[in-house]
Image (cartoon, rainbow, N blue to C red):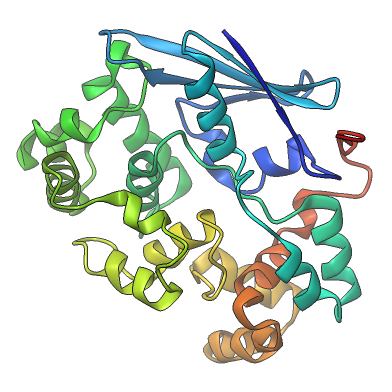
Length: 295
């Protein structure tokens, strides 16, 4: 089945895919030269379905063994097509370089097909290297994923004991948090749909995520950034180091310096920081923007 979706003006497929590191974590794989992003999803038939995304003739094309409605919903989520950046454009208009970056790259973050997968991957990024994160994701998929290819569902993970997760996934202290989180989602005690409700204030959302075991401020704010909430900075060691490369100063004052520099962007201050810190990932001479043309 194939689904084709209209795209916002100046949409850049490559910029969204490489907006952060998710494209480098399975089941995603990205052929940049070909402009194809691939993942695998559980279609509840005991097998994993391959889904590919690309831009053709100004449309986002999703192809896979799912019905058209499911493919469209997945494509909209993965490429954050439901987000409106008019407010961000207004906030960043006073900073020409950031305004150009937003215009050229947009602020859309690559998401996985489900919020459960996004949340678990964010949990796996805490207090460890990227190589360690990748290893944990790979081992979890091999242990519980359908066909050892799709990211496992909350129900599949909830069936695994904390000991099994600790020894087979080798996720350390995260094992208990992962088991509890999966169990709460699978049982319906935690409805992740509420985390994507626009009527939920950013402060309420942050408090709700932090309330889950294992999800500290960084994980909560990083997940919020993926969901299009940029009120917070999601500071980690990489962001702090990158900031001081661009704006030299004492490490002890980095957090305060970041807060002062970007405070004027209000609810979009986290986006301003991210566009600034990742400017080197998207040089001007990078892949051309896909202009969908008139709708």
